[in-house]
Length: 81
Image 1 (cartoon, rainbow, N blue to C red):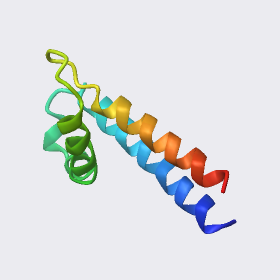
Image 2 (cartoon, rainbow, N blue to C red):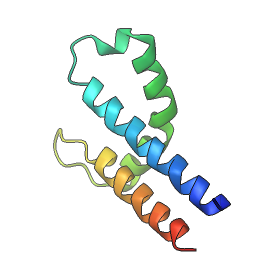
Image 3 (cartoon, rainbow, N blue to C red):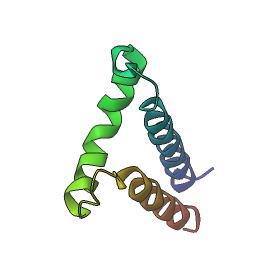
Image 4 (cartoon, one colour):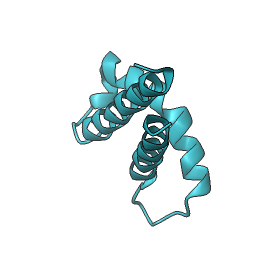
C-alpha cells in the first residue's frame, strides 16, 4: 500500500464521518451526546469552508454533499497516482 492509497482511505473514512454527522442531525437532541459533539468538532472546520464558497439555497445545506464529492475526487486522483 502506497502513501497515496493510505491517504485516500483516510479521506474515505472522513466521508463516512460526515455522513454519520448528517444522519445524527435527524435525531432530536443529538447534540447532547458526546460522540455527536466530537463529530461536529472534526467535521465543522471543513464544512464551514465549503459553506463559505457555496451560495445559500434557502434553508438547505449542501455543504456535506459538496464535501463528500470533493473528497471522492481527491481520493480517486490519489489512488491513480
